[in-house]
Length: 121
Image 1: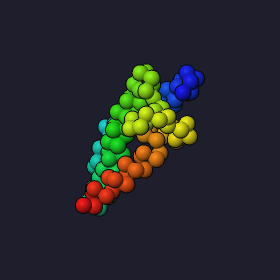
Image 2: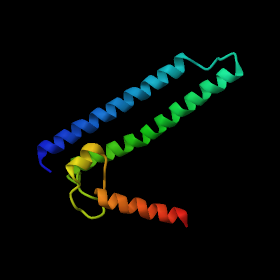
Image 3: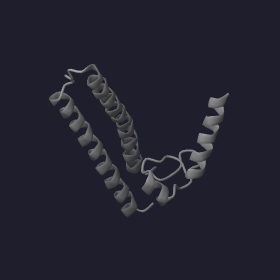
Image 4: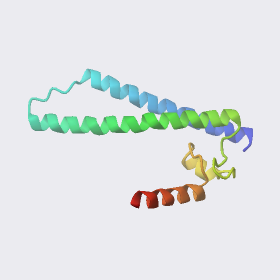
């Protein structure tokens, strides 16, 4: 991968990270500003369910931040864009769709099939 492509993916990852952090701050601000004080038990349950979904989403994004940081580190060390299993280049189309990808599409699909089979055992 050439330096221009690496710079592109670095910027893309940094923008994605900034967006996630901004959304997390907005969620925290909203939680602080609007504590759950629904008078009706049904309304309160619905609000709690909505917040539970929102917090689960934020937790997934927290895990995504770790993967984004790892991808940025791979860019820094020159390992970005190469499959961690085979060492082959990951296609630019795959990286465009999933900039945190660590495996080629073929290796990822094989990994997921094996994972599914071992879960079924």
